[in-house]
Image (tube, rainbow, N blue to C red; front, side):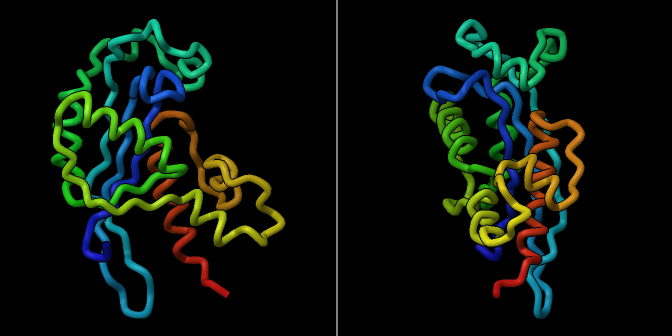
Length: 186
């Protein structure tokens, strides 16, 4: 995994169930790992991608999910079809390691999108979860009471001014990952 790029991914969806809800926004930060002597890798951003995706079944959406994600028809007027997005996405993240906060949620939707569209997943099989990393590294820190993305951003003094938008949350995940990697194990 050391030689693979890292793809920090966040999805915004119409609900929690990947069998009936859809991705409506996909944000990605792709970073190259550059080895450093005596330290973890330096991360160089290669791509920042933000896709708005046309929902096919907006009628199955959970109203609360749409409210949190800020969905409105006007902002999605020029959104792309899921297949178009997945084709472009897969070229940009080819051979990269999937990284997300609470990765299982995002991965389940991305995997369902690959299946639905028939687009081949070109990513490396490895996956990293910043929630699990934070739990492991910050468990004994009494200042950390929650491991949610917004809580960790606040803990690390990372600004996420557009929370619950995919690219902003992917950028925040990237920033949290960098902070977590800097923490020395005791």
